Amino acid sequence: MTGFRAAVVTFPGSNCDRDMADALEKVSGAAPLRVWHGDADLPERLDFVALPGGFSYGDYLRSGAIASRSPIMRAVVAAAERGVPVLGVCNGFQVLTEAGLLPGALLRNAEMRFVCREVPLRVENTSSLFTAGYEAGETIRIPVAHHDGNYFADAATLDRLEGEGRVAFRYAEHLNGSARDIAGVLSEAGNVLGMMPHPERAIEAAHGGSDGRRLFESAVRGLVGA
Image 1 (cartoon, rainbow, N blue to C red):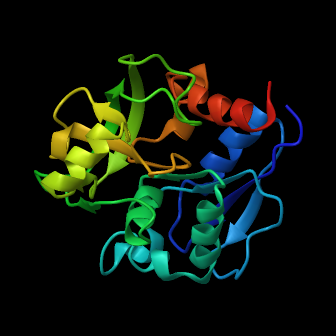
Image 2: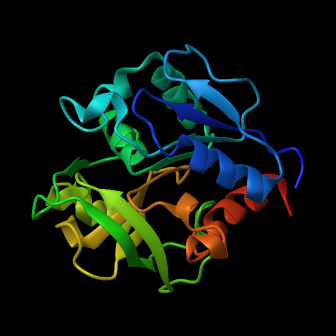
């Protein structure tokens, strides 16, 4: 696949940025550009932006709160508002909620424990750029690694997300206390996805499974074709 131009943002404390960059390169054939949190602008003509997992700024204040005020986030928000696809995984999801690109918040896990294992997810939305490669209702297995993955939103927001088909993935088991077992949500325009599980850690058999690969394949195919 040629012509795909992606960027991976690194914050102080990111620890999945190389995994994300590797997944994007293996699927698209093009190494993504690497962007530092202190940069004021994103590279021109981007097809895709990824905010990786980790512990940006040591998770001080709230997970993702300080990172959401990084200089680069003004450019990320502007790109998302122009329709550029943005994927935030784990800490990246937290950053997206703190930046106002997605509704809700990620709280401490219900039992105050760090969860690190493969979990089953049910695919709820197959009409987005990110999820078109899955079957509706399909159960996939993706690793998680988080302490603050408990998705919270008020009842009206949850009802709106459900009614608009913006719940992308749902835990197929009670994992961390997330409202309605939500594991990933889409923006109103559908071009921003935040999810706590790590698809970049499940793109080939050596990872123990490849269910995450289709997310990247779907995005690349939708943007530049097969």
